[in-house]
Image 1: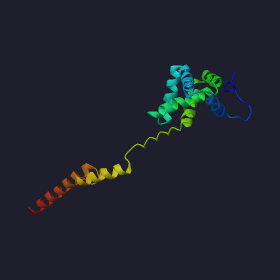
Image 2 (image 1 turned 180 degrees about the horizontal axis):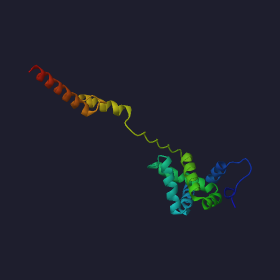
Image 3 (image 1 turned 180 degrees about the vertical axis):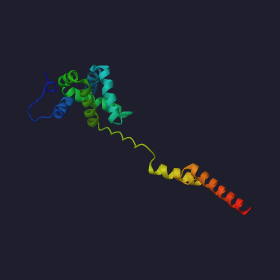
Length: 163
């Protein structure tokens, strides 16, 4: 059994072991092994990981390939532990795999959703358009007609008084 398949308790990091193993293999062989790891995962789990990653990270185009490669790498680090975690709590393990893979791949976070309502620029533009149409922003539309009606009533009373 190679040193990649078991955990090491000494100070050697997994990345160093992976680099040494990569030097012994050609790139096509490494790619095939990673592809086999990804293909070995159940389809619903792969969809769940990708769905959860899409909720948090900006996963489009080339970023999707980076995500898959990162999931392969993380899952390959300790396949048995991840399989046990998936058996215990599939949703939590999928979420953790998605988060770790997104961070490892360096994916940009999705921007937050804007708050409901108009932005300051939209409010300014709306009021400018209203002023250009002859409306006073912030004043109800019925108010102008009532004021005009009151003025007409007052003028009619004045005329009646003078008659």
